[in-house]
Image (tube, rainbow, N blue to C red; front, side, top):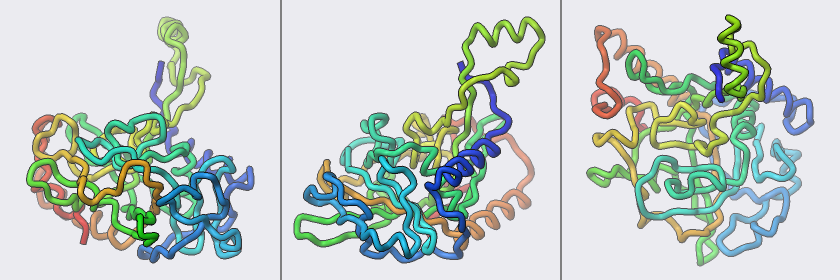
Length: 318
C-alpha cells in the first residue's frame, strides 16, 4: 500500500550518492549547453546481444579513459561524462499500434512501447543527474492540469541495418500523431517520476487510529517508474521522461501511434542516447513563463477534454 512521500527529490539524490559510493559513477559531473554529437560509439563490453545481427557494435573499452562509464555491471547503461549523455542498449518490441511510451523497461509495457530496455529506471535517473540534468516535477491534474517540468532531454536512436550501415535518428521520427499522422514534434522533459513508500495497509490503518501520520512509518521506498514508464508519450505521474503537453489515453485531441514505416524490424538491437539540452530548456521555460504571465489563472479542462495546441507550441522541436 503506497503512502505519500514528501522527500521525493532528496531520495533521488540519495540514489545518486549510492551509485557514487559504489564506484559506479565518476566523481566529476557537470552540465552541457547543447546536445553533443553522437559518434559511432562502440561498446565497452562485447555481449552476446551485441553480436546479433543489426546490433550496435560494442563500445571500445579504451573509451572509459575518455569519459565513458558503465553504471551497473549487469545492465547495458552507461554515462559519457565528457559529452554529457546517458547511453542504453535495447530492442525494438513494437512497430504498429497506439503508444503510451516510446521506451519501457523490459518485461513491463512492451504492448504499448516501441523499444524495451533491460535496465532499472532509477539507475537511468541517477545517470541523468550525474551528467548534470535538472529534474522537474511530474504532471498533475489537481486542482488543474499542470504539465510535467524538467530539463529538455534529446532522445536519439542508433542501429545497424541489413546493409551494415549505422543509422541515427531522433526518437520522435518513430512516433506520429494518431490524428493527422504527423511526426511527433514535441520534446521530452525530465520530471523524474517520484518515490512512494510501501507500507502494509493494516499498519496504515493502525497508525491512523492512533493519530500517527502514515508517512512516518517505516517502509520500502519504491521508484514509481520501475513500473515501466521510462520515456513516455502519454502523461503519467510515474514517467521518468514525459511530454510537457496534455497527452493521455483518454485525450482524443492528442495521442500517438508507432510510425511503422520508419521503424526497423522487431527484434532489432538499438542504442538509445539521452542528451540534456539546456538551450531548448531555456526556450521552453521562457515561453511557459510568458504565457503564464499573459493569461489570467483559469481552470483547465479535465484530462479527457484537454486541448494541447494553444498551450504547447513552445514545447515543439526548434
